[in-house]
Amino acid sequence: MSLNKVRVRFAPSPTGPLHMGGVRTALYNYLFAKKNNGTFILRIEDTDQNRFVEGAQDYILNSFKWCGITPDEGPGIGGNYGPYVQSERKDMYQEYAQRLIQSEHAYYAFDTSEELTKMRDEAKKMGMPNWQYNGVSRVNMRNSLTLPKSEVEKLIENKEPYVIRMKMPRNEDVRFEDEIRGWVVVNTNNLDDKVLYKSDGMPTYHLANIVDDHAMEISHVIRGEEWLPSAPLHVLLYDAFNWERPQFAHLPLLLKPDGNGKLSKRDGDRLGFPVFPLDWTTSDGELYSGYKEKGYFPEAFINMLAFLGWNPGTQQELFNLEELCEAFGLNRVSKGGAKFDPEKTRWFQQQYIRATKNEKLAELLADKFPSSLTNDQKVTICSLMKERATFADDIIKDGVYLYEKPTSFDEKVLSKKWKDNTASLIEQWIEILKEIKSFTSENIEADFKAFLEKNQLGFGAVLLPFRILVTGVGAGPGMFDISEFLGKEEVLDRIEKGLVQIERIKNEA
Ligand code: GLU
Image (cartoon, rainbow, N blue to C red; front, side, top):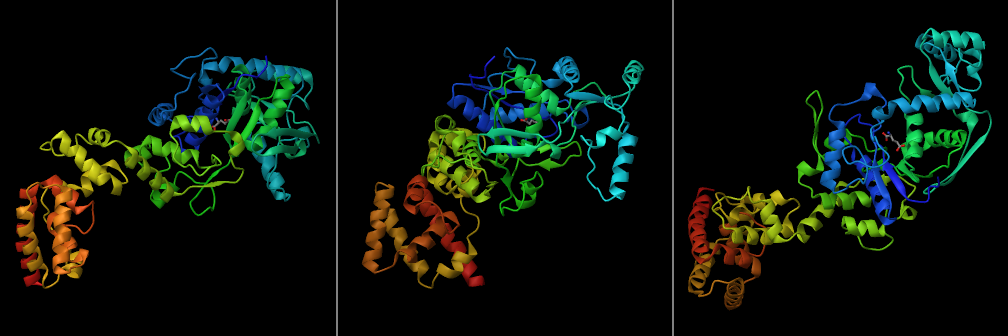
């Protein structure tokens, strides 16, 4: 077997909802596969039954669906290398653990958890807080390297619980070339005898992960930096089995916006932005918010994620998924941690909402608009409002005056911009508006400018009061466009009613 065909996998453990860092790992794997005509595999690593969380696997699949990342092989998808859930592959790992025992790369350890705790406590008392089961300490423990063979056989026959541990060689340099970090060299004296197979008959992550990567012919292991410390053990396991090693690429961490430490699941709601793709409610009823429910478009989310640790080497920032597949390469993934920037994330969303066709936005919002509006009106509202919106819902919320008369007037703007002569200027403006035959944005604008010129007025003197009267607020899309949309009758009605109300407010003040 040769790993010359690109096959990559995303291998989450279903221990909770998928963090955006996890989605980025999946995305980079997906992009790498697509760029290289390869295969992207989803494998569920559920060998740690204690940490299994109901619903986590569905959450991963739903997140992928929302993001538009489709695995080529995986649970519920199929493929020639299944099953793709490790608990369904349970029976095969035992044989591989045995092989390592036979080749003397691993051994049985019978130490009870009480014995291990005792060792740790004694070491602590002697000033060694980080006791490890390793090449030095193993000689004092109860394992198949220290006990006579007959006793080992008896213990196994009597079904005494045991684990299988890696027999970490002493003082060897483990070397491998990481696609992102370059050469990594670790001396085995710094590594412990990791458990490979547990007393509950399940492999640990390390064994299952490399057995499956080999069985699934994974060519590149692209995963988060937190797995870098495990890589030397994995490399040694490949060598012990005499298997070809995959290429490794350890992705940079996602950091908090201030750069101080890893972005954690608690940061999001604490700092006011989601760190999960979709909403997730814990079994205690705690809600972690998701990008989807906050109103982000998946395209914006993906684009933002792609840039957290990668850049295309050009000024271009907006990439759809297809363009990302084309542009992506591990050579442009950075080593240093990637600072998450909530403002930039909003910026991406703003770019995407602007680029979305008005018809599409109207369709998205169809149920949220008042039913009295025609489709054409909805489309025009979207075209007027989207430049200032971040989320689609903002169009409805901020553009309420496009389908309802204002019920209040921004007092700050009023107190600053409503002068003693404002009402009389507006009255003159009303007369001009009444005379406009074809009530188009261009015609209204032309007459407005002529009116200002004739009276030697600045733009703001009439435009802002005009805006306040028609919309109730001090900012929004172009007033002439708004006026054309509302129509002459409605504009005049609003101005006249507004004038009365504002004059009353002014008199009361
Ligand atoms: N199951 C591991 C995780 O939860 C996979 C790590 C790897 O990709 O090797 O992230």
